[in-house]
Amino acid sequence: MLTQTLVHVAMGRLPADLVIRDGVWACVQTGEFLPHTDIAIVSGRIAYVGENAAHTIGPQTQVIEAQGRYLVPGLLDGHMHVESGMVTVTEFVRAVAPHGTTGMFIDPHEIANVFGLKGVKLMVDEAAVQPIHVWVQMPSCVPSAPGLETPGASISPADVAEAMTWPGIIGLGEMMNFPGVIASDEKMHAEMHFTRHAGKTIGGHYPSADLGRAFHAYAAGGPEDDHEGTRLEDALARARQGMKPMLRYGSAWHDVAVQAKAITERGLDPRRFILCTDDSHAATLAYDGHMDRVLRHAIAEGLPPMTALQMATLNPAEHFGLSREIGLIAPGRWGDVLLVRDLNDFRADLVIARGQVIAEQGQWLVELPPYPYPDWVKHSIKLKRLLTADDFKIELTNLRTSVVANVIGVIENQAPTRHLRLVLTPEKGEIRSSLFTRHPSPDIAKVALVERHHAAGTIQVGLVSGFGFQTRCAVATSVAHDSHHMIVVGTDETDMAQAANRLAETGGGQVVIREGQIIGEVQLPIAGLMSNAPVEEVARQAETVLEGFRACGCTLNNPNMQLSLLALVVIPELRISDKGLVDVNRFDFVPVIE
Image (cartoon, rainbow, N blue to C red; front, side, top):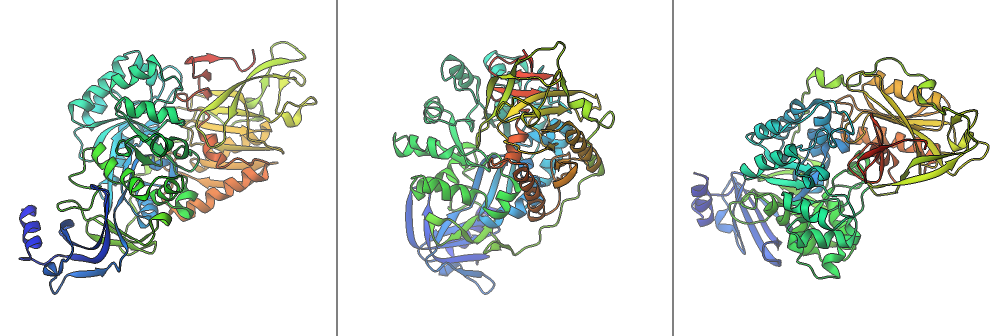
């Protein structure tokens, strides 16, 4: 038995496979930094942690000299979506493990909206063969808001019950239908019941600013964590109600700084808090890092290094019931250890996962073969016909000199949007972008949602403010949370049609058209969401999209991620779906033109 082997090694009766000598042990379970520590690992597990492991070294033992570097547990991302990186699970792991991430809790909500349970199973199977730990949360809300959007597939309580029996499923993904939970919706509560019955964790998602009776009811419904907080009071309320605040620092969502004040200024117990990324763009992964980036930011915002480490290791492990396996350096746990020189500028010199040295100085030392995806997953863009400029017009039924329009207002670096009511001037019976209006309102572009799962031919056209386009252009994406139809935003209807048709031709991704020419493109043929190319290549392609945004006049940080959320009908205030313009505060439709 494994425990016998661990005991034999700890006693010196058997040699270890790997010994790390003379490091500073970041003992997250006690909050101590202990110098001159050795670690002995056998069969992928830690057998001994102490001042001298010389008795565990045999002729074949691999010995690593830490030379006073910190010995840190492998980093864990408590909540994330692989699809947001635009790459497969394998390529995501290839990108992040050299930075020190040895465990991820992934919610494949995006591919579930395209392919349903069989899409989730693809991700579970791929996760199972990775050299690091990848656990899957079963997506909960597909569609995220029934009646307000049409997904490519749906997830039922029976699907959730089945998935809870699969190896690798750690719990239920973020419960986004918070109005359904509050209203005691049968489907939502059945999914949480099956998860609780399986002894697994229920993920939360409460983006509302209302911390009154509705929030208390949501907490009573069963979600055990939440990453949607953006304010200090959000962190306080969640922690006090027994939920784990997940402070996210992704490519576009920067919610750590404000909420960390719950610990640094208000003195709350940090062991209730977890760090996560939620959504990381390919360029962020390729150039800035992953959970190491989050740690650097959290420490810069005033969290003590030990506190930040606990929030990225032991806290998520305990939250998901895995502290017997991961999250700390201690006997019996997996040998997931990082060697780090400076905790304040956190960068992993050496990464050991499951007792194997997998990366050094950011470079892989072991083979990570690509995962073979079936052909059917690469044909998900279905349009009824080629689109034309006429499909993107907003024509008035009667002539007026001015109209009141409901406009989506983008908020930089945040997931919520504003519901703007603006007075606009029609041009020859049409509403056009501000570039083509004699009496321009500031920064108005068109936004369209094109149904792409069932070739229904549905196109909804609305208005958006905040992208700052200064020229004739259009940007289209098949990454469009949560139902992942096609979103097209632009100032020119002809360019908008060209952009949409290009995505249908390539199988999905993102494309920028300026004055009829493609100036930026990333191709994502797997479900219209991911590429199986290395993250560096995808990042280079994605950078052309960001350059395209800038060439069109947009100065937002990560505007492609802002674009991808314009159809997210579970986060206030105003969104667009295949059924129309949605006022998320009221969960009802509003007209584009009043």
